[in-house]
Structure formats: structure tokens, C-alpha cells
Image (cartoon, rainbow over all chains, first blue to last red; front, side, top):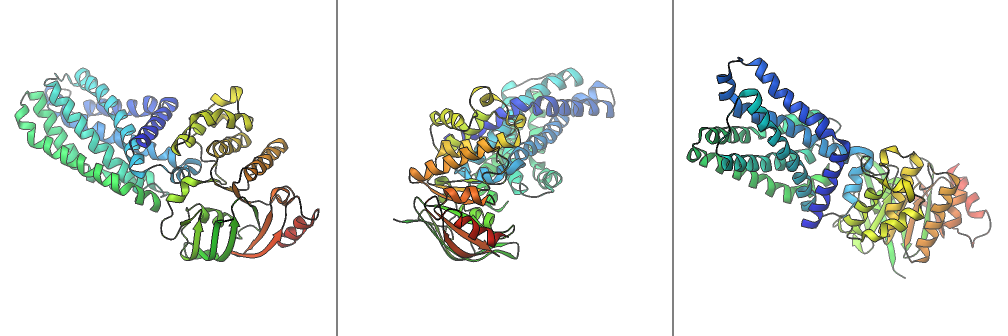
Length: 222
Length: 234
């Protein structure tokens, strides 16, 4: 399983490096989202500073949709879905590999967005350990759930429009918990983040387990 | 000699349409069997059913000792399917695509270079992204993946399509070499003159069933198998 996961993750990341879709489209998209929020809200930096955690995670959430859609778009092209099923790869390894590749891209994006909110919103970053833990747990949840719902919509012609409808409501707990935990980190009140970190952990574990056991049957039915 | 493929009254549905309506087919280990028949007869569905991609809903379907009605997945690692689509990643190079196919099946990357050379994709082409290849080169790349993996059962759906004459000759040599190594080959083709020359037997598929089994191959009477098959294809 682990070898298959590494193979799939390596393949997906190599495709992203060569296609540059992440660099040329996903990163600019997420930065544009941050800029548009800055325009939409009162330019008073105090408002932006207070709203920064929520805006950060909304930008990450929307970008995760793009990354997930991209992850399955390359598998839908030119009969690759059959190729994937014929490959003999362990379905659990396939899930882990695809989710890991999405997670790696999201973590890089989050690092850039942290710089973005610091520059655009004047946010002062504190409690880097808590910030990193929040980002890690939320990213695992986003990538896990995105990959589960991505394979659900995989074989459908309307997958591009269906995926956001399926996945956005499901990701609401991640958005809420990550935002609250992020706020606690920025306020330097790590104790207030405990329950939110617990929610993020539970969500991440739930969707990783669902993906490990459900990805194979879902791929067969897609 | 054991059977690589054993189908009895096999039925496959595409939606509600019976794409295979009770096929009987036995293919022995090491045989090269040509599936001939008109468009829509069920050749592609038959190959995809053998590959475990289309479920067999009635009858018996055993491929390489695996009962496809019980579980379609385990057999896939033992066979290779070259279908109408090339199943390649556009942004990866030729070598990377073949390497991924081989490593996904637990094979060695050492098999990649000889396979690329065999298909004429060595040299500068090996590092070219697949998106920049012509249709014929893409098909060669898919075939290179099959050669590098060298599965027990080769399922080839119109393997000559899109290839230049030299490429078609390469396919014929690949099939002949695979058979010589004891691999089983099931191929569907409309290029009957060419395919019948490498096949040991022909099966005419019509309306989702196997209508006739004809002798074939280089040892058969010259032209006879092709003409017989051509009558059925129209």
C-alpha cells in the first residue's frame, strides 16, 4: 500500500510540476481571492486583520476544490480511468497517493497565503506551532474528503460542477474549526484551540478511513 | 494445456443493452485468437469483460484461473489491455508513462528502455511529453507499456489502428514473440489480412455472441481464414 501510495503521489506531483497548473492557475486564483476580499471589506486594516483567519481558510477551501478537480481530471483524460483500474494498484494506496499529492500542494499554497495575509491584511503571525498543526490537520481533512468525493464524481460528465456541490457543505466543519484554531493561534491563546483541533483530527481520521476502505469500490462504480 | 479464458453463456450489459448475449469462448494458454466481426458486434465489450472492466452478469467467466463473477480485480495485474484510448498522461514523458505502468505492476524499471527501443521510442522521443506525440506515437507508447509489463494475457483492441506500415509490422512481431514466449493473445481487428496471419484461430462475433470458430494463422490455407472472416464482416 505504501509503495503504491508513493508511486501515485510521485506521479501526480510530477504531472503538476510539468503542467504548472498549480503555479499558473491555483496560486494566482487563491491570491486573487485574498485581494478581492480586501477590496470587498472595509479597507480599514483592523477589519481585515480580524477576518484574516476566515478569509485565509475560504481561500484554501476554494483552492482545494481546484486541486482535487485537477487531480481527477488527469485521470479522466484519454482512458486513464481504465488504466488506473487495470494498473493493479492497491486502492488504499491509490487513495493515499492522490490525497497526499493534493495535501502537498495545499500545504505549499497555505505557506504562500500566510505571506499573503501578512502583506495584504497586516496580520501578525504568532504561535507558529499551533498554526502549523492547524494547517496540517485541516489539510489532511480537506485532501481526504476531497479525494473521497472526487472519486465519487469521477465517472460523471458533470463532475466539475457536481464536486463543489458535494464537497463544500461537507467541509464546513473544517472551515469552522480551522478558522477558530487559527484565531486562537493569532491571539496567542493556544488553550482555546484544543476542542477545534480535536474536531479537525476527528474529521481527518474519518475521511482517511473512509478513503482507505471506500476508494476501491467507488473507483469501480465510477 | 489449461485455459487462459473460459466463457460460457457469458452475458454483459451496457445499461440495459446486452452487449454480450451469451458468449461461449475458450482460449488456451499460448494461443493467439483473432476476434472478427462488424462494428458493434461486441468485440470490445468481450475484451473489456475479460479484463474485468465490464461485469459479466450471467454465465461463467474465468480468466487466468480467476472467476470474474466472484471478483474482477485480482486478474487485472496479470493481463494487459490496449484499447481504443491510449491511457497515457499527457504531461509525463514517454519514459515516465511506461515506467509508471511497469512499477504499478511491481515490475522493474529496467524493462522500460528495451520496450521503448522495441517500439522505436528510444533516443530523443523517450523524454518528450506524450502531449507532443502523434496519434501513432501515442499508440506505440501504450504498446511499449504492455511490452515492458509483459503480462500473461494480452488483450489488444484494434492494435494496428493509427500506426504506419512499419508500426503495424512491429505489432505483428510483438504478438508473434509474445506467443512464442507462451503468452496468450486475444485481439480484435478489422485488419483481417494482417491479424489473421498472426492468429492461430479466429472467432466471429456477431450481435454479442460467438457465431463461428475458424482455423487461422500462417499454417492455414493461404487466404482462406481471411476470406471466411471477411464474409462475416461484410
